[in-house]
Length: 460
Image (cartoon, rainbow, N blue to C red; front, side, top):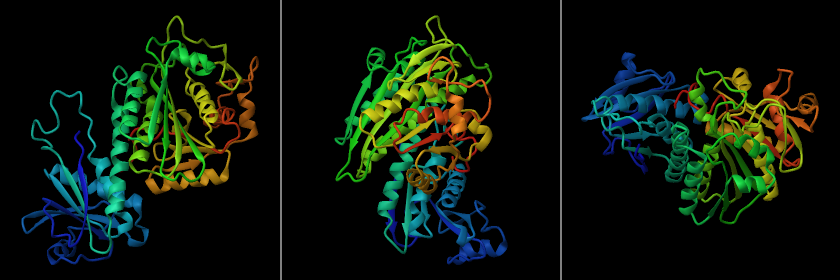
């Protein structure tokens, strides 16, 4: 879909060229415009979160959306309300939206909720949205107006975040015969070519082996599609703080390998590269926002396929840091490629680490599609990452690490095993496995298997 124009304006909400205005209503409160207050008095417009009413004033469509209780209103509720209003406006054929923000603090959240809701992926449809008149041409522009503060910076930054998120969704939604490891590497190269602050490298199968990444190479050996270790380096203006390592899992299709998955819903395993997609497009946003930081992004990209040359249950491989691993289950491949990717980030000097991965089905059972599972070996670093999750609506819930879970990682014939025969605490066990490759540096592991694609969110 083409990008949606986003702008900010200071002034009266009614002084807009947009064909549709959006006005928020808090529970128990009134609206300043008499024509809109009539809908409140009649009971047609309600303040409950995401409640909607539509009217026309001076020839313009006005969508009234409930914000809930004022003292409970925050960025996440703003995103949810914005998504509800944008969805209704789109259904009614709106081409342009003008938001009246109730506070400069949530101006960015209104933009994010709108952009995420209006996202469409129809690249492979012969009849695009609107060809049959269903959605028209869609909303092309979004404006945020404020009468009590300048919101230009907040709106601009939110546009960057929203667009980067939607580009990551594009990568996720592409089929695996298009979004190969080489394709992801080329996307990373394209991003780096557009920013002087970014550099790019990609390593092929032979280079992966030569660097001693026996764990990553073992997963990749079963596929005839070339793997890639994708590396993006960012140096921001006046960088402050530690060197951050962002590590992403990008299994572009996960059949399970020799330990093959059931056929049902296997087509969804094109989403097993979601962590890598998030990291690649995050680097685009980091560069566009000129974040004062030093970041090294490492994305391990490969298919996991069964073939005559695939890694087999019982094989023993050696990771980049010298630890040996029994591969007891070839469908526990994500932790194998992340092991070497984390080692590489450490070798490159990363002082703090975050890895993002669709790692375990068990985290979906535990947390559903609302929270990602967060694991950390450092309380201070965890606190910073969790705060970022809360601020952006990408909620995370801390899960435990414990010596008992580490015991499950110990192998019979090697240092570690990638899958324990004791089928318990599977997500925690997987996190303890990854912990063996971070060199005791502050680290947060984000298991996004339940949140990687929008099955449970209110605004996506």
